[in-house]
Image 1: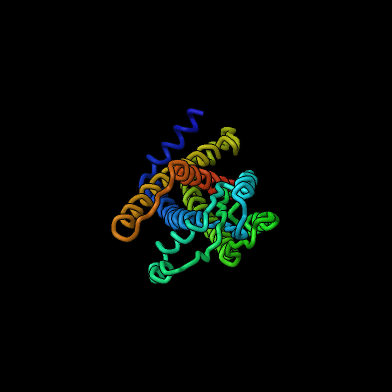
Image 2: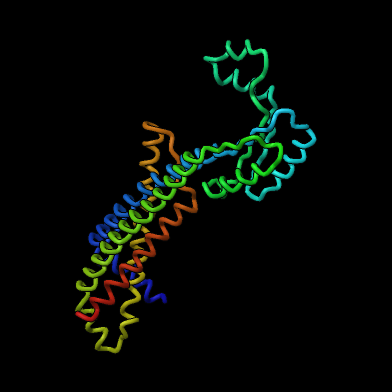
Length: 285
């Protein structure tokens, strides 16, 4: 194992310019992927913020006894999808309307009778804020005898679902495309290293070295290059994030787990690129 590590590190010493070029190329490939990842992270944060506004409002029949409302509220809070259920009285609804609808404040103040019904506002847990679960909760609310009407903005929730699905699909396709490009780049650099050491490899074969023994240093070399490239890409992504956050818009950066995943992903595609290239080109040496 020590021999494999030493041989892998010696490869960087033998061809420092080629190694630096390889790491830089990998870093910029992963940097583009990191920029797309930043867009995806901030888009997900924005969608999560919008999804927090998803709620189901059950309007109550006039004259509903407070006891029936209290019992129903407890039943609704027991729904597995429900995060909170809040009772809003007629007076609270009117006060909220006066505060929010400033242009109608005078009209609302002159009302002789409060026309707004009491309601129960239901917020769902994050994993249940999609159209299917919202619709299911709305149907259950309609089954309560004291509920007059239920509103939840079906079209708006369905559009939010479609936007989340589109963002996920684009993320997978673009991420896979950049990963393939990075693998090709790493494979090309490893191929150059194999060809550069063709005479040495031929001598190793003459003395009985197996393909597995010859291949291991190249695999480790590719993984190290991918690891270094991933670390540089995270650093460049942080610099881009800092500039965007300071001069353009407030943005979010990767969590420590996501940053580590990018570095690990660099090492993985470095290993895959090396394995693909070495397996193909050792046969030609």
